[in-house]
Length: 411
Ligand code: SAH
Ligand code: SF4
Image (tube, rainbow, N blue to C red; front, side, top):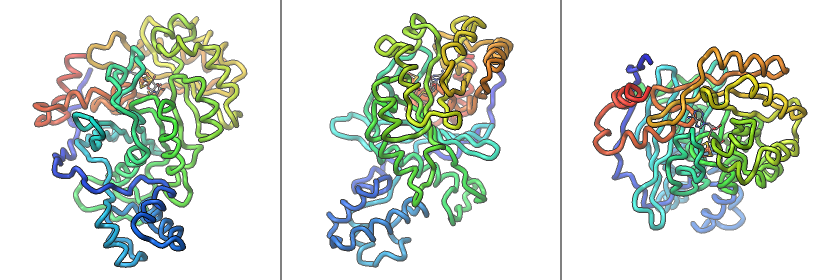
């Protein structure tokens, strides 16, 4: 394929020196902030007011230091700065695709006995009239879907609430998406016009329903109308089908839902999405039928990755619409994004169109998800390549050089 070698390497920050010794307050929930303030000696009767002030500085204005908090007393600002920071996850690289997609490789602080600092990826996808942030919920994934590169990476750990929210804060910092923010004139930020991150999808690394509590708290923080204000109607959790948690997620978190279906028969789905052996298609679809609030205005998205000669026949397209009958659904066909060593190929474009036509005639809008950021390995299921690729000796190459090499050899 034609290689996009004008990928812009915005920054590669080597920041071993940045590893925080003080904990960060950025990414905490309101309760979390209150409890830290209490521990810092703020009197009980001021806690609510002070926590609200901090909340607003952190989540509306996006400040990165306590000094900027002009309505907080000088004394308290100094006391907070002694104990805490407002640091986000550390950026290892920031890459910009020719199509405007941005991907950050972030390094998280080591925890417990971790031998090395784990790394995760977050992707921002700008489109006309909206911008979607694709965030990770785990480092790696315990599941082993055969078409997914993340699935080849061993799970290191669940992300904390702060690390999940931290991805949103960092993305907003980098694209100049805070109200009233004046982007520094470093040439890296988009001009400040209006809100850029309008939607969040939990479609990065990991199975979000296996990190239920932290993902829930993080999405509550993201959706809070006094803060980051990304409404739950604009947040979508994607799951491979952890049946017992699906309805619970709907009741407790109430975001939009996407299901990684990818096959219409258990035999094939067992192979592509091995969790299907535990929770087969019929049980999965039952859980979907019971998803709270389901209506034509709140549909479930069914994701279907197009694998050449594997799941892309027209008989399967017809079976797909038959299976979903009665469920308010959208069908999202995803061209397979290749990665080095992947055992599949993407379906031919004509076949994707024929498949999509069957789905469309059955009454479903069937947008084919256009692959975004392929040149920087930011597309669905490719979120592992870069962290592997950019290790050690690779760090000195530009991601464009490395991407060109990997794409050249694998595509
Ligand atoms: N673990 C969750 C969310 C992360 S994966 C899940 O599986 O739903 C996000 C989406 O990317 C899923 O629909 C997944 O099936 C899809 N995906 C994974 N690898 C892909 C690849 N190589 N090409 C295209 N889509 C892929
Ligand atoms: Fe994990 Fe989702 Fe990839 Fe499957 S598709 S391995 S569940 S990240």
